[in-house]
Length: 447
Image 1 (cartoon, one colour):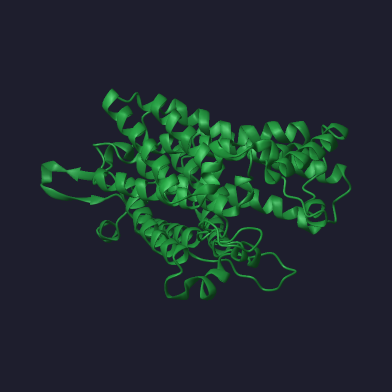
Image 2 (cartoon, one colour):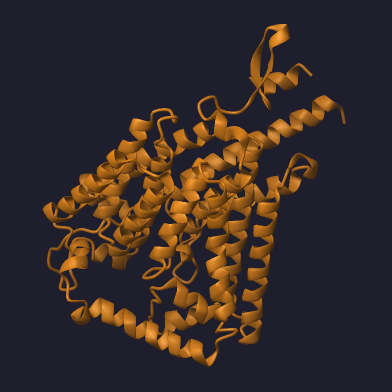
């Protein structure tokens, strides 16, 4: 095959990856799932995109991909964790329980998305500016959809929201357990206020990380981060607020803020408290007003945790396997991903879960100053705090969002220094020719 044909095939694959990346972002942030019947699990549009990503990765010549040691070690860890999950399944005699295999599918999706976005950034198929602008446009659309939902504009909730949220969540929107009018908790495109708060946390973290003065349009990024924080508050998630406070604390430690910047952050915090009280986000304000010992929701969670911990003590090493049926049959919600992982996969599983998040966290910490590294540090912090009273990585879209950030961080591309100009340009100053992108079709045609 001629050099021209090889380069043309390379461009086609890169353009396909770019299309798949756009489709992936649109799917996880904007599109509802597809339900075929009540007995079958929901199918997400990005599932089809992931298979396209896998096929493209398999067809990519290995010589064109420079996998660094960081992502290789992380992928090896993910493989070992998946093998341990299978060992716990076999050890509990659950080989023929098909629902257990969906946990392996989640790991498969995580790995494919991780590798795809690593390649996209490493090969400069996407510049940092490309990704930022895409996420900004998507966020504006998400904001519009959330406002239509929160204020039920044009009868949005009865017509559109059933595609995004289940009947139980919709029936409790704006009402309490007695059916009386109550404060609204924004469900968002994830159909769940707690998960929606984590997605809004992702947006706020992403825009804050891109709000340095060296970034283009950094003031607009601050505004978008503020809108994301507002929607997080409108989700009415106590855990979301606590995780956001933790994120700001870590951000302050990492960024070495000046007194002026610190006062600005404290001002945002004070304004948030005012908003919570003015708009009567009572579910959040209960953090400092409620008697926790008399709160049925909290005592109910403690009871579930105590029961699960008691079971963990009886099988501390291999747990009980993925075993989704146990929670379905007993109508239980673990509401704590640490307890859930220890219950499913034993002590080894709990440690593996921690490493799942801490390996990227530590790798990002070593890249201090890089924007994606900062995003990974802050979002990892949010996940670790949220996991105390929620199951963030059990939500498929939050899972692949984290995979995307980790892939971009592990790529550690020199494009960090080319934020405004996009992909690195090859120049030929001695001939006075105009620079062109490294993998443009126009350049291929001249070979």
